[in-house]
Amino acid sequence: MNTIIKQISLLYNQELYSDLLKLGELAISAFDQKHDPTLQFGKFQLQVYYAEALYNTQQYQTAESTYTTALQMRKYLLKSKNAKVQEDKEFMTDVDIKYKIHLCCLKLKRSQRAIEVLQSISARNRTPKINMALGNLYRDSGMERPAIACYKEVLKECPLAMDVVENLLKLGVKGTEVNSLMLGATTELNWISIWLRGLAEMYLREYRSAVATFKSLDTPGNLCNNSALLVNMAQCHNLLCDEAKALAALQRVRMARECSFCKLPRNLTTMFLNYLMCTLDFLPVGRKE
Image (cartoon, rainbow, N blue to C red; front, top):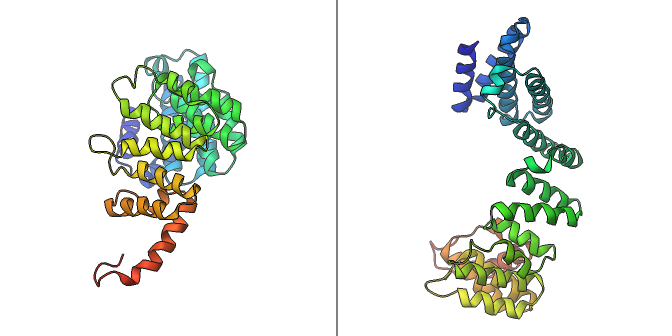
């Protein structure tokens, strides 16, 4: 069985998923006919690789079912104290498989099922990736308190997880509290503390203060011409009804070519597209974009 596992692993590593599916389906059927206990770990590996190929070919319903089968097989192997699974504990752990099942559920738009799967992972076994995923699901379901708890757990291990920082601020956590979770990681990076203060002011709707804070970073040696900084400044100017300054900031983003429209808040995208439509005809020939 080692030969077939080696070849399937090779196909997986080379991302030849359709080939893996064809070989995997045959191999699973062939080895299902054999009842040798020493083959159980290999059968588990086959299920995992097959599920991975299904997921990567967008067959999410079947992938979820196959991952679930693999999870049950792994639990049986651990319960029976299978030597191979004891030796190779890191090959698709329970946590890994449950995370994959949750991804399938997301693709199938079954968010409640995704939450339940991740919740079944004990708190002490939740990695930052698991807490982040669970936090996002709680947030999208309107469950703010558990979302905040999950995001805080992420920051404890990854204090510079900037998406987490923004989510906490959006959910109303004070900037000082967020900053306290990041201590130690920002002591030599003063610009991060200033950036955090600007975000906190923006989400508290203190837009004038936020603009002033962001402007202090828009200088050589700091974050001059950074697209994220300019977009935040534009957002604040727009919310202060200062369209001219908002457009000026967005024009700098466009000139730097660092940011696509998909990264802009919807209201800024609409405003900037309208601006481009009005100005496009006045560009020299060959400069139209």
